[in-house]
Image 1 (tube, helix red, strand yellow):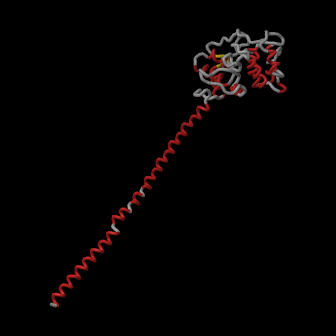
Image 2 (tube, one colour):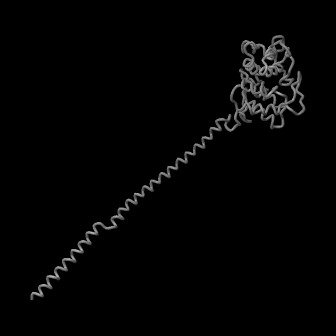
Length: 274
């Protein structure tokens, strides 16, 4: 009887122990390793990787749009896409293309070449600095009394195969296409305005040929006399002698390099242009 009772107590104890073990396993389920995996929500913290959205910050590469800032090159171009203004380029072209001797008087008769417009490269560069700044340097933009127009015609004199036509247009007088526009809106080139403007810049102080623009303009553009002179279209654009504007245009060019004696030759009734 006592033996049977002992077996019953032992069985009860074993049942209770198993229940306890099962309960401990339930404790483990409260901290399941999967919950640690759920902690891989920290992996979704690899959303930091999504912060590789900073790669989209390579949108700073679109900042290479600064390359479009090469539009600054067009800023150097006169007339948008035209060659840039340059006295060095202008003078290299005109001195290379326009090499035939200037006549004393009469028409230019150079055989196939263009009439020389400057006595030296240095005189050309010094004269270029006196021109009105700006102007287009392309075939569709070159016009008016400015540097750009002369630069276009200097290049055309070198490349077109027709320097005889383009050299006068590129020289100090502008030769018509690069000469001042008449104030009255006319179509005849206003060579006197171009001449007088440059003369007052080149001949100053003791070498001044004219006291004012008004004095110069009063002498220029009138029939030749002891006090007046005019351009003669039958003669070369510049000549070294004769009572013409043609002669005075040559001596104005020479005066840029040597004010004495050439500034005096740009006045009426003086020296070779008497």
